[in-house]
Length: 449
Image (tube, rainbow, N blue to C red; front, side):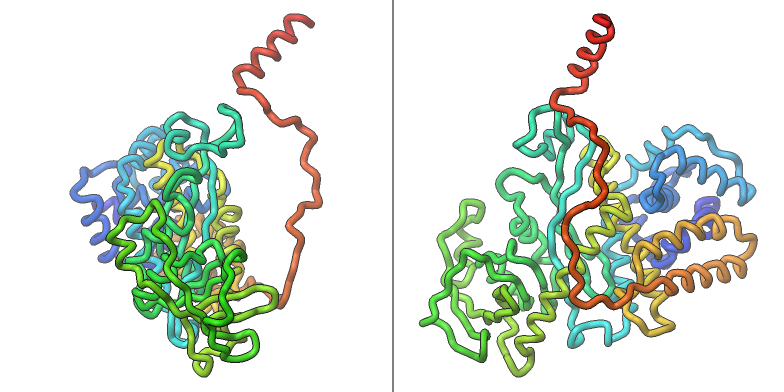
């Protein structure tokens, strides 16, 4: 335990995990991991190395054990083996609940550290959206996360759908669910339904029209959660049942539809028979919201709130492209869920560092570049690992925060870019058969030649 604390206190990952106090982290480890033997990779060390692994561009386990050996040598501890087996087994022992608890705790700490002016009308805004990630093509993963039904067997990769909840002010992921991309109950609204009890009364939810479901909106309203959601394009409202509040601004009433097959009768009976919403037109889109008082929240403010939804698209791009979570490496269901949680933990920790870096100048976290922040934390890893004294580490961390705060995103209002790429990929044919068959054909061609 003493060596474990030395590693965490002096290691590169400590500059991020120190977002949580040692006492709080000990509580989480004790609660989720329980008593554990003294090992080369105890839970806290494994967690820190796992976070470093997903933050770096080289996510190989060989890189992890090499850096761990370098760190132990710098601290004067006994040398560890370069065999990746012990580290991989330590990741398998690491409880998924511990990683998930750390993600949520870091999000809470980062959000509570923000100044009051960072929130809209002193209320937290939660952005909601879904995204997909792929993973290695193994029978176990194919059974849990089937590939796209349009792809022949053996030519696709398992796909998982993630529905995430991100705080607008801090940019941290507070909650998420992972499920397959096909099957009953795997849609984005159904996945969000599982997270409803984790919201607090007074939250403001922003989402696109995929979540414009009567049952979902009624459930949010019952819990005292306001929302601004784009209205589904197929919904037709009766003008005779509306009350005009202003130009392109009116109160509407929806009736409860028939019970869907995935909902039980008790839940259906608890849903109100009608809901009253406010409908606002913003450009070419109609928005529905429970912020029905036009004096407290004007129609332009409703439009501005919905425009903030685009931040979650940028956040998912940062998680999948900058953090490289778009293609996972692990080959079992349990490890895939841990790998996703570890990526989200690394992302939240960087967001927390960005919040700390933004404080001195009083700027919003969203004004800083996430890619530059991740780059700065990786660049300072070796320096923080080998700093001889606490004073040197404090100086290095201060320089890291200054570097994070230096790279800012310019104000680009109404920026628009085509969803297309200019650089052409290499003209390689697509694999339209399994690799085993393709290899057999190549061998046959060689024999003929």
